[in-house]
Length: 267
Picture 1 (cartoon, rainbow, N blue to C red):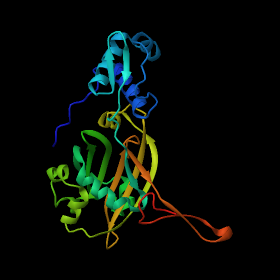
Picture 2 (cartoon, helix red, strand yellow):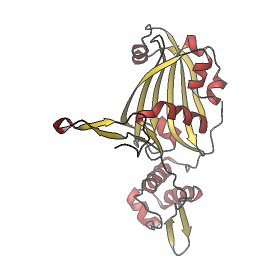
Picture 3 (cartoon, rainbow, N blue to C red):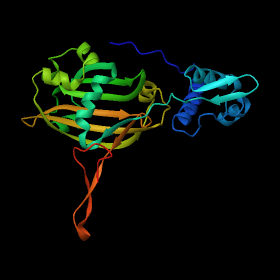
Picture 4 (cartoon, rainbow, N blue to C red):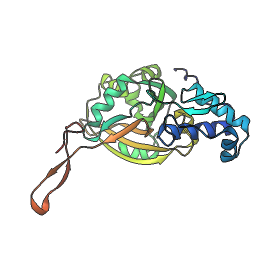
């Protein structure tokens, strides 16, 4: 199993909360490049913590390259050239894009086990109530920064064809196909949720941060369920797009998804 990268989070729960709050404000533009942060004492009052806690948080922000601290001139936000453009996924062509993303990003395996399928998984995959599934949780990163938390459920009869190490190094779609699965289609749904403690720690974000939630059920050519995915994505690093085209005549004219068209090419 891959070892996690060194965390930039400061020691101490309060210092981490301050760090993550300021980092999120910098990431979404509320604290703009070149803007000075309030003095340490003011920040301590705003967050209800000591100046020592504020210094720990600012030290980590400085180490992350998000601020510059200069004696006599205060602390300045410095993100020019560092803030990455979020990965944009076209909902109309999401599946092949996700497969390609699995080949161009890195994954860290957090957990790997076998057990009875949870009720919601058994229902979605049309499995018997006590059928065994492989349950794996991974964090996917780009340039060392985690952006997604993925939990997959695969029937044990299929998952037996690959190992824990395979899953840590190879995209799941490829492993399924190498196992002889002939994938036909999938159904996906997208919603929003908030980060719980475990997910927040894995993604390096504050507890309660907003996340995109994606659920996917994959089936083979015989209609059998072969994978259930529960994916959580950081919206500051990942976004979903859907190009639309205007169709119809008169009062029936309406918008429809521009299937297969890249973003920006819709009517």
